[in-house]
Image (cartoon, rainbow, N blue to C red; front, side):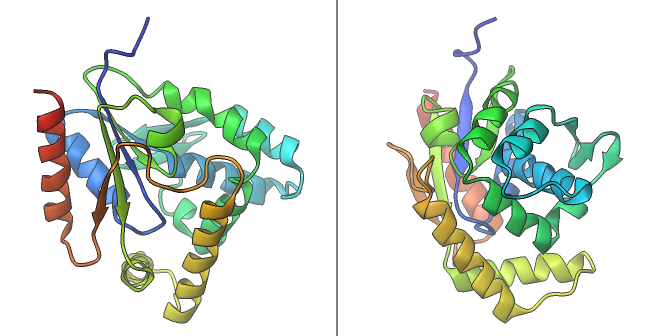
Length: 222
């Protein structure tokens, strides 16, 4: 059945900008479905690492992405019935995901999967190209950003809280490298979608960012 009538809030932005937290809270408040598109790339990366797939083999990686046995249950990410919510947040997985996301065939393989999350009563989707590529006609488009220093601090806290070791210096370098890859790739580079609200969360709380998105949503559906 056609899904074009189902509202979508697309929230894009760089790593650790807070878009996942904001998107999840907005979805909860509205009773909408939630899509963490970045998790799909991380799941593909995790499978590739575990299977020893050559990260230079674009077509082998696309096959993994096309047949990704995944689901989102509450706040958990499930891969073949295994809860991998923490495993996909490891730095090795994140860096690998950023590298394989530059491959056009991998991105194409995941399009259908992402579109399938658009279900009534609505969807909040976060990622890098939700508003610019996957849901270009979303009712609300948001580009969430923050300084590299602020994002590194958040990522450091996330990792430490989950029991992972972390280095601020390494995180700063990794985030900058990911930003460069994401903004300079030929396919779906990271940039604000046309008509997107740009929100800098460097000095904002998550609640303040959520309130801003909800106000834009309320205005869009009037």
